Length: 250
Image (cartoon, rainbow, N blue to C red; front, side):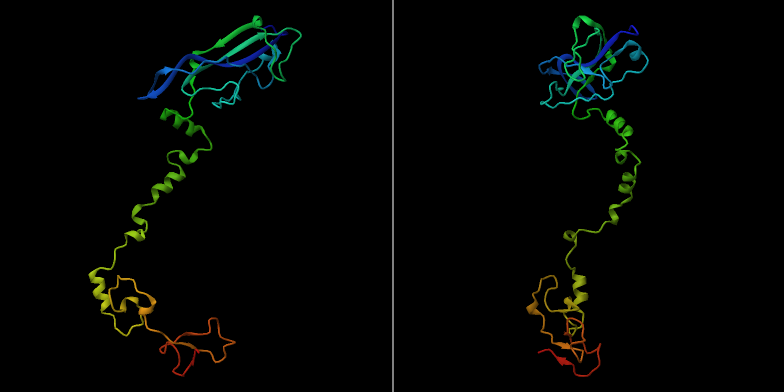
């Protein structure tokens, strides 16, 4: 480049061929005819498309803010499973520059100085990583993917939980066995069925309604119901209170 002459740098991401590809058995292979090829639009540098030769040569020129999309609403969408390559175009600009928009100058094909294309930069556009090694590479360099790395805190917590420590599901709890039934049938018949439901007559595995239990009287153990806690009336339990006759609930 001539130091004092203006130059424009434009990046185009072009299709390599007209084929569609697939990833199978750990490698890429052709998978038929691809989508119709379109003309790639030029992408100006984010710091400005036009500058002097001296300015371009004094710094590293990077298009690291370029993003690709497969959105059909975009003017130049990418097609998944198609091969592309970035190409850098350098134009020698005239003294008077016409602009197509705020960042894109009008380019004359006859002013093209060079088109730089490197085959090692070819890539296949995908919507999901096909290669597991690439997936792991992205995870290892992504600061927001710490939970997916081997030996992460999430993995340690997951492996520290033993299945034997988990509680059994209610659906997997067995009904009362014959040994348990014999034990519970030996409970004194005078036991309170509200405190010992298994002491009631009948099959302990059979659900019982409240009508099967005897009616219990309720008593107020406080002389003045205004100072008694709510509820005022409690089941009569002679072993827990003095033998004085309590006030019976109406």
